[in-house]
Image 1 (cartoon, rainbow over the protein chains, first blue to last red):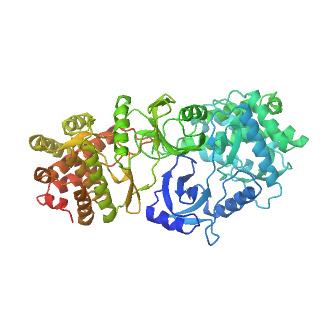
Image 2 (image 1 turned 30 degrees about the horizontal axis):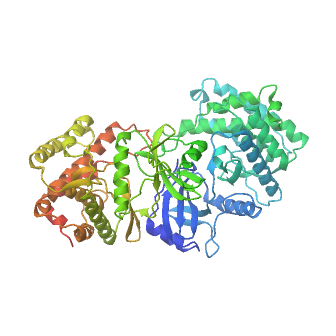
Image 3 (image 1 turned 180 degrees about the vertical axis):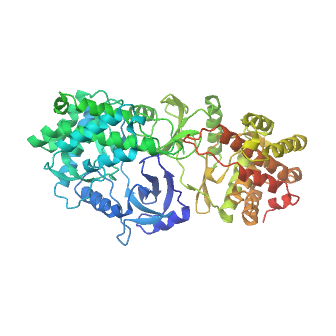
Length: 320
Length: 320
C-alpha cells in the first residue's frame, strides 16, 4: 500500500511529453510496492507504471537498476524495463522525486501459489540467474549477511518484539558468523522474490518485479529466499513438500547447483529467515502506528528459522 | 487511499467468467475512493473498475446506484455504468463483499482547477441535473439537513476538535432550522462533487464518479457543494471570484435557477459547509489514529461557513 506523493496533472503532462508515448489518458495511484509511490499511467500510446522513488531507494542506485532491468529485458526475462525518453534519459524528476516510466506487465500477484505455480516461479528464477551469470554490474548487498548484526542492534531490545527473541538472535548471529560460506557462485540476485513480486497468469510467469533489493550475493541465497516465501504456510510453521519440491524442480531445470551449494541450502535458508525476521522486527519497532505502511509480523520468519534449523532441514530442498 | 479487501485470483477469474469481457490480464488495487476497495481490472475485453463495497455503503442501496448510473449513462452523462453479467446481474459477491464491475473512464482528478475547468465542471453538473429532473428514483439523504444535529451530537464535545466550535455549531444549527427552505426544485443529486470526483482531460470533463452519497435533495444544494469545493483556497479562507464565477457561468448554460433558488444560495452554502465541517469533525474524533484512511481537517469548512455567512456572500455566486 503505497502512494505517498501527489503528481499534478500539468507536471505529468510535461513528463509524458518527453517520451514517444502519446498523451495522458489516465493516471491512478496503485497499492503496490511498499517503498515507492506507484501509478498506473495510461497514455494514447499504451500503459506504463510511473514510479516515484521515496526515501528508501537511493537515487544513486537508480542507474544500476535501470541497467540491470534493461539487461534482463534484453535477455527475454519478463522484467519491467525502464523506458528512456527521446533524449535517452530514464531517470526523471517530478514532484520533487526521482521517477521512472516503466513498462507495464500483465499478470496478477499470487498469495496462495499452487505447486505448478511454484514450479514456474522456480524456473523463472533459474532463467533469470542464467541471464545474470555474465552480467557485469554489481551492487553491495546492504541487507546481506554482514549487515544483520547491525539491524539487530538498531532494533534495540528484541524481547520487546517477541519474548525470548534476543537470545535466539544472538545465538543465530554467532552461528552464522562461524559457518557462513565465502566461495559459492555469486552474481546480482533479486533478493526479494516473494510471491507478491511475481506476476502470473494461470501457471505462467508474466513478470518479475520490484528489484529494489537486487544486489550481489550467492545465487543459492536468492533460491532460499524464494523457497522461504513460496513454500510455507502463512504462519511460517509448515513447509509444504509439494510446493517446495515443485519450486526446486523448476529451478533445477535451469540451474544445476554444485554440491557445495546443495550442502549450504539449510544454512543459507536460516540466514534468509533471520534477515526478514530482523528487518521486520526493526520496522515493527520503528514504524509509527499511524503510518500508511502496514507493519509486517516478524514471527512467521522466526518459525521458518526454527524449521530450517531442524536436523532434517536438507529434505525440504529435495526436487520432487 | 483505500484497498481493504484482498481478492484471490481464482475468485476473480470466476467473477470475470460471468461477463462477456474475456479473461483477466491484470488487477491492481487503486488508491481511490475512501469508502470502498477499488481495483483497476484489465481483461482481454477492456479495462474496468472492480469495486468491493465496504461497511459505509449499504448493500441495500446498491440497486439504487446501479439504476441511477445506468440512467445517467443512457442520457449521455459521463458516468461509470455498472456492467451487467450475461444473466443481467450487476451486483455480485466476491471475497465476502458485494461488488460491481464498472465501466472505466479516462481522465485525471484535479486538485487545483483553473477557471476554464471550473466552468466545465459547472456545465457537467448542470447537464447531469437536466438528466435527473425526470428520473423516477429516490433515496433519502442520510447526510442532509435533518441529520446534521445528530452528527454533531454523535461527535461529542466539538470544542475538542476546534476551540469554540461547539457554540458556533449550536448557533448555526438553530439558524438553519429556522431558515432552511422547503420548496426548492429537488431531485436526486450527486451531493459530493468535489474535484477528486471529477475526471478531466485538459478542460474537458470525462467522468463524474463516486455517486455513493447521491440522494434526493435540492438541486441548488448540489450546486453549492460544488461551489464550496471548487472555488476556495485549500484553507477555505479565500473564495476565488474567477473560479466561482466560471463555475456559475458553466452551470447557468444548462440550468436557469429560480429567483428563490438564487436567493437561497448563501444559506444553502452555509448548510453545505456545516455538513462537511460536522462529518469531518465526527471522523476526526472517531477515526483511530492508526487507520489506513486519512483523516481530513475540518477547519477549512469552518472557514467556508464564515465566508458564506458574510453580508456580501450573495456576490460569490455571480456568474462571470
